[in-house]
Amino acid sequence: MRLFAGLLIIFGLVMGTVSATHSRRLDGNTLTFYFYVPSGLLVVVAFLLNRWRQQVTVGESGLQVGRLFSTVEISYEQIRQARVQPLAEAFAAGSRKRFATNPYTRPLLSKPALFVRLRGSDEEIAALARQLGPRLVYEGTLALPVPDPGALAAAISDHLPNRGTGSNLGGSRKGRRRR
Image (cartoon, rainbow, N blue to C red; front, side, top):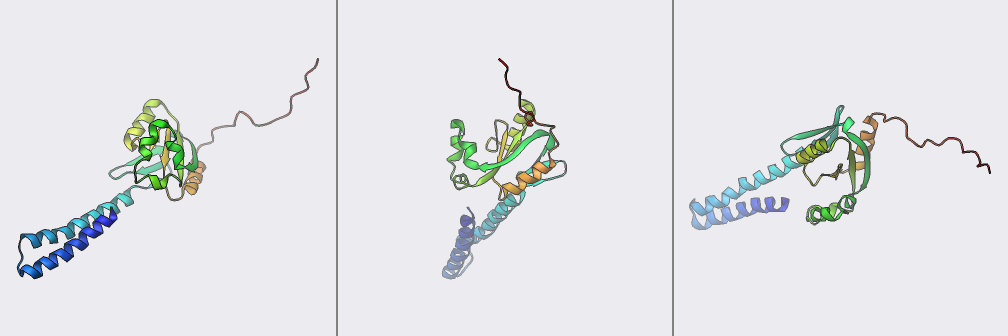
């Protein structure tokens, strides 16, 4: 898509100049070709804005997932666990394979991604899935393909509240069974 924006600008400049030199006047065709240049620049600005807005940051109150027109904040109380695994794990289920066939996501499948397990009621998770979309949230897990998922997972784990002690902490061995 970025190639398309560059081609739009180059094509508009070249064809506008060729049209202006051959007709030696400014007519509708020449203006149409020169209209390609601001259109291509607008597409480039849209791509840059999209990249700038879609980012994941760790804040003091929670994980902030930026979308194009909004930012969704997930509090640390809603996060159960953060881990790193290949993105293909999210599309292993049969109903999710349709998302993996997208040509834009196919190169990302072998790369590691951040997986955030969410806690809360089904209604809260469904509301979060409506805000972020079905590609990112599935069955209480948020899958985010980010450039450095390990550092982001460590930063999230540092902010998670202490969940108490686990159920299996070791301990002494049981005595032998008497007969």
